[in-house]
Length: 80
Image 1: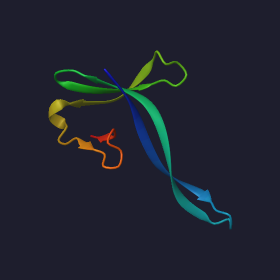
Image 2: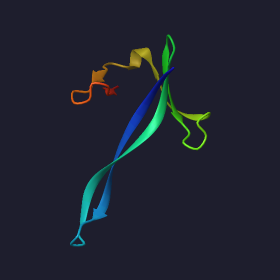
Image 3: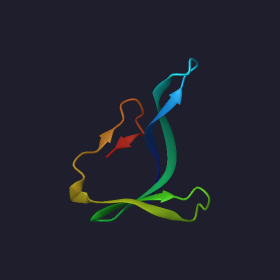
Image 4: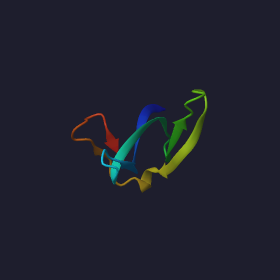
C-alpha cells in the first residue's frame, strides 16, 4: 500500500472585479492509497472525516497501464 495525494482540477466560473464571468481552474487535494497486487492496482480515496475508512476510487489491471509519466516540475508527481 502506497499513500499518495490525488490532485483534482476542475474549471469553475467566477466573477471578476467588474462583474463579468471568467473561467478559473480550482484544484482540490485528496488523500489516496494505491494498493498494488500482482494483477491489479486499486485506488482508494481516504475519507476526510474518518481516516480509517475509504472508498474505492478506481481499479486497473497491470496490462491496462500503458505509460507512467513522472512530473517535470515536481519530480514526486506521477501521472498514470
